[in-house]
Amino acid sequence: MILYPAIDLKDGNCVRLLKGDMARATVFGDDPAAQAASFEEAGCEWLHLVDLNGAFAGRPVNAAAVEAILSRVTVPAQLGGGIRDMATIETWIEKGLSRVILGTVAVEDPELVRTAARAFPGRIAVGLDARAGKVATRGWAEETDRDVTDLAAEFEDAGVAAIIYTDIDRDGAMGGPNIGATEALARAVSVPVIASGGVSSLGDLLALRDTGVIAGAISGRALYDGALDLRAALEALGA
Image (cartoon, rainbow, N blue to C red; front, side):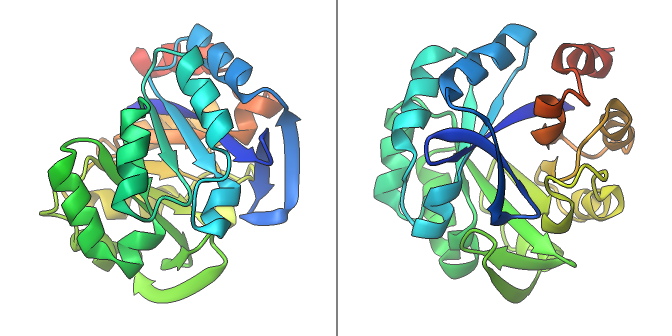
């Protein structure tokens, strides 16, 4: 199972939100590229980047910070937030992004996901963010009546590289991930599922790994708070 250190970007800074609330952001650093380099030095295989402002604006807002990260590190990175058209997808891949995460458009324009996955094999992921099993969009500000598993199943034959499942009520709360829901989703679809939201300890990571069906996990606040040591976690997962 791959551990993805998260760098969430708001106004050019590294932050973490509590349960997706932009008004409840904690700033952890003003140099995202340096943070990315630190994660790489610790041995991470991937980076998970989120343009939080972009998720609300519907277009890239923290592009400068993302570009600085891409120029600083050599490990692959995936990015979500405000990517809602083919031109933006193409631009990011041309700039060196290894994987683009499509969230809102997976609900509003699923054909774009399919088109992008055909154009860029292995480089498109679907981000499904949910409260109580129902998908939320536009920076988690709008809730839908779409069930996570049903929506994920619609992309089974689309050729997407992964589904990133975030339990919004767990995100940034340091209360542990929703292992049951994530495992159920991973067993329901053949697309690799990456867990996000609430991963706050080595025990959480090992529990996710031990399901045997979850392909990856994203952690942010726990790494910044020191509750999770990245180097030790990577060693444990590699054991």
